[in-house]
Image (cartoon, rainbow, N blue to C red):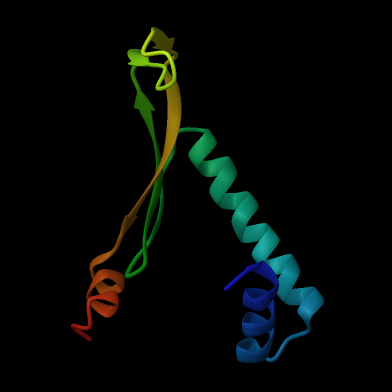
Length: 93
């Protein structure tokens, strides 16, 4: 499913226009991005939690040359599925 298909699904399920569904989805995505960027967590009970983490600087290898390269530290985005979501995907509910 792509973004447009999700908007169609949201609009149909909520009986709202596609324009309204697109605005809701854009607002949700923006809220997740801003919350995670600040270092906070966004938890949706039964669905999952979005958070940020840190990856330390490390030494890697260029696969073409085998030469050692430095990989800078960076922030990462994490998503941990909630129990209800995991159970659903695994056919337990």
